[in-house]
Length: 310
Image (spheres, helix red, strand yellow):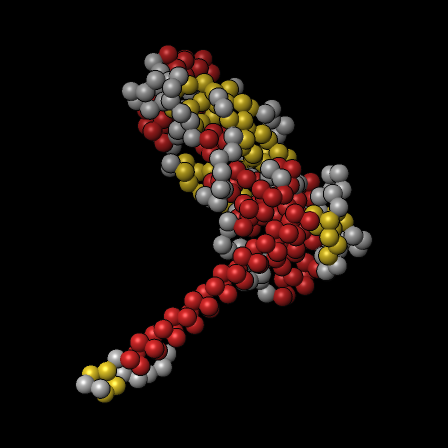
């Protein structure tokens, strides 16, 4: 493989790790570490790149001030470790489903990476779920996508649904999670059920079942999916919010005690929909009556020329 010149590499890698630079510049393995470090030092001095943390760099657009230039947070998050996978609300943000801007970016990794603050942002590593690691399936539901010409890994919407319900503390609270997930118009329910079974957590299965049942019309949820999730529910009633064991309403089908604010939220949404539908039908009948009356009154020379029904 032919070695890549640094300027070409910088054009294709807006955020990069040290080993990526070495692999591209010294494909033959003939350059010494001192030569590589000297190259990086040179480009730092002329303001072409900035050193973010050990082994991590970002490219400065030509003509820009290194201190004022910004780094795309999704690219940065995807390069903090070599195996980083954008996850939780960060994944929803990448999929353009987040309703607000978060300053905390979360990613899966095998490594015990330290939390990394960058300006006003905060990047946090989360271990892959243990049950997935045991099955060697930690990359189930992970997509390889492009951003500014760079490949990054991010959890799918289906996996993100499960991950957020499994660890709500990483999603900004239940109300926030509910709003985030409700912004998604479609889930591949076969993948949702398969990932739920891979996770092997009965409480999470019950949470997923409850969410899908509450949104069965919008998401076109067939009964067979709810039946599978119901069979995997806990044998005894579990609290939906385990921390502090917040009291709520017991739902027998999923053996789950759901906080009142979530139940009330679903009821309020149903009430709004019913009100809108009722208003629509009232308006429709009023319009129909008025239209028929006008048609009936249209006459030329005393003769009705229009008479029809809607």
